Image (cartoon, rainbow, N blue to C red; front, side):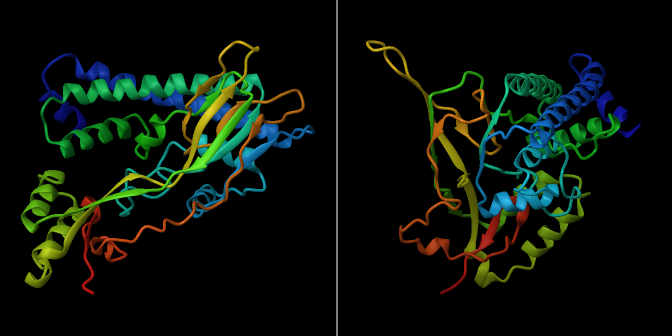
Length: 322
């Protein structure tokens, strides 16, 4: 009823029709992800060994723990990750809603598994487009109100815990078996800027204009109680990229006289599926350390920040006085 009352105030084209399409598309997405997971489970238990290469940095170990899986069963672990389309933690628990489960690496799979991955990607794109269309009919309403309305649609469809970012992100795959794959780590880059109390208060109000979110209201109270001597120490941290594995290039060789091909694949936040040969093996690929190398660059004074965010909703920290 609450959702219908909200939607009745929205003009433009038939928003009810758009809302009705979201549930079936998400059901289709779950079904497709389940089929891919089943296919990977079969590879895990097959008599023939299928080659795998999963890295185990700290964030990947945390992913395996959140999924209740083990690196000793890499195909089962990857299948669980592809099928995890809901939040692993309760909504409103204080976790970053933008965070996704990360697991870099490569898996050798047959064509039938690649086809299931392509179908899953098609369903992800259809669902993402439907959400974008629905957001568009909400017009110029505040971001928090649009987000809340989308979550009401998801809840009415039976998916109150849907993690949109994990629903959107595509499975990386090499449909045509390459001759070689180059892997490398990239370093995370942080953008840190000074922000004011007034700016933080404005942003928190925009996130919760009706004052109905206890987490946001608590952060507003923390901000109001901040001692005057600390008001110049507020810093917003924006992560421009996280240190996950980058598939720099895939390589295809050609006949003499023809130019070889190099293609960028993307960041492997999830295992990349690669067509296996008859023996179930991956193409030649580079191997890297489980952990990215530490940067030797000297840190700026601005990076002396507290370990816990002062205002988690804004990624605002307090600078530690030295």
